[in-house]
Image (cartoon, rainbow, N blue to C red; front, side, top):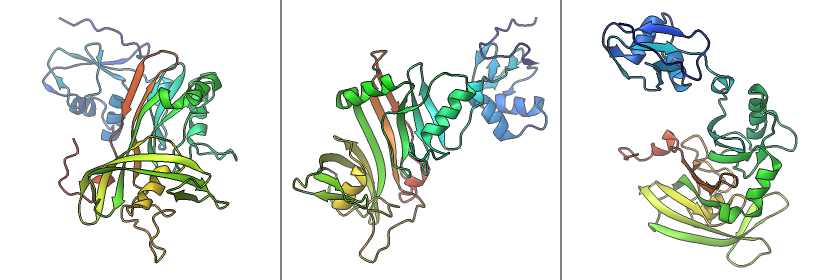
Length: 310
């Protein structure tokens, strides 16, 4: 007897339906029924929540299918179809977005550079027919990856700006730095000030700049490198990069603050090894605590063979 199948909210009017006649895994079933489809395309369909089994959406590629089940393939929404190689939307509601930015992307640009996180989100709003604009709440350097916040209105962005320290209650980074850390953990404190060439200088005494504190904890280390977690007590420009250089352990891949006496820097991993992996804040409208984490890039584990990443 044919099972009743619930219509999933994302499905098109006439979704493709396939009856399962023998036990198999979902990915194998899709590859067989959609003859010629690539494995990557099948994975994207699952990631976009367009696959349902007996009326329930699933993203599990090895979902066990049994005879008598019904697999539906629905049409993805505009939001599900939107894709950028530069960022992923981790969370979205009526008021704000949390994104995971890739390295190499500017947060925004006064010259209206085409590829910035802000411009890509504005394109996304047009694509999904949302009447709003992306408003920068905080920034990451071009070559720093990780979690960022954007408001959908200037009013929401101002709510964060006016009470940043109390609204954003936990922000952490992970970095690969040069050398073996002498201490398991510690705090770096200094005053940071830019010169006319936009280089941030650090001073142990007040130099007219802004006071900054960075707490660090060593996660893994060997003779050449250390993986450290960093928590900001303040959010100054280039703070982590400058403070790590201050204590003799510059971030790997930093051409600005990681230069040796010979003018060279360690670029063995092919990028600036700094990633904003944790972001926690009080939602200013919903009045709820929002907590997000994203895995650090796989390349960060390369100097530490056998490292347990769980």
